[in-house]
Image 1 (cartoon, rainbow, N blue to C red):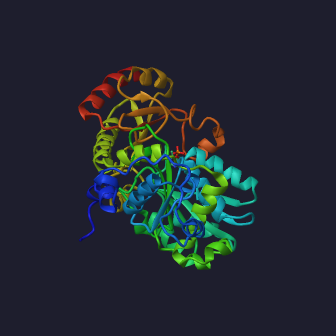
Image 2: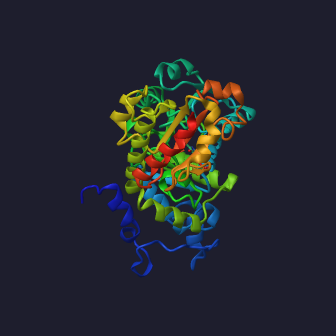
Image 3: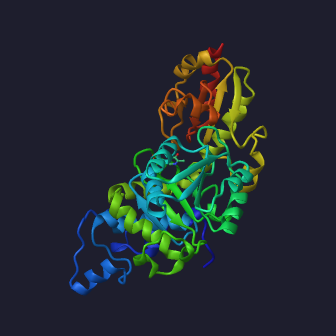
Length: 413
Ligand SMILES: *Cc1c(COP(=O)(O)O)cnc(C)c1O
């Protein structure tokens, strides 16, 4: 059969790979222990010679494995490891693949908590350089003999900067660097980082993939493009498997074992339910974001609007070339930042809350909340002004959203 579309593949996924009694969903497996009739099978699961077996739920369950297959399918990868949160997935990736003395190049525009994690890595002796990845030359110039990895996000939050994703992919391939792309904002519904040569794709499942704001989860997917046999930090135990599989095997074994941030079956099931409507939700929320961005850009009380679907955006052409749409994430500034509290309080539909990619529209002032701890210098370097508002567009009917913003902006002076 030809390769199926994203939604067809995901809604039929469990039935095709098989589930008890013909259930259309994989059941929620709650067992922590998994027992075997023959001890040889128990030994085989431990040693990896018996594929697809389970021993202890910290290392995965049939329900988390079913979700992993779906994410692997979404990203055209060769395998996925799920974690309890997106941050756990990123932490496991860094801590299992980097060592003290290694060098990591990261985009300067990353999720605030990832930025905090970069500080933690430095405390453990990993050298970290943050650069403006919108220009590939900044990445090239930062490469050192001990550089192992480059980390970027597809669309930065809240500034919506887009790295030179293709250019960085080419550099990583030439230099043998692991290229990690956080696809959380776009998701596979809009973009597959494998297309630009990503080694590993991160998704916070909490966001676009689950979409309902009712479960936390994270995932790392290996695209199969990288030959891990040349990568220095793989333990001997994992060298025995195929060169393409060694990296993810180490992330799975050591990441889940050492850090223990495992996804539960209940949460995996909840995320899998949300994922069935991924493409439908992302279409609606991205259409809403574009309409809101155009409306805000044309409004006299609004200063800058940050949305890659607008021609005024510096990476508009990259978004057009690489992404199906410019996503549900946008930010904007009021001309008079002093009116911010009044305007936000006047909004009736958007929920004043942190979080992203909910079915409901969410709004938050950036500087005094999610980037408060980062301090004024980091905010300045990341292009975050005091009056910036971040909007995560939901799937509401667009007329209702525009009407609500129209009335609230009357308070903008
Ligand atoms: C939210 C987010 C994360 C972290 O995900 P959690 O599931 O909240 O831990 C990582 N990267 C990006 C881009 C995010 O938006």
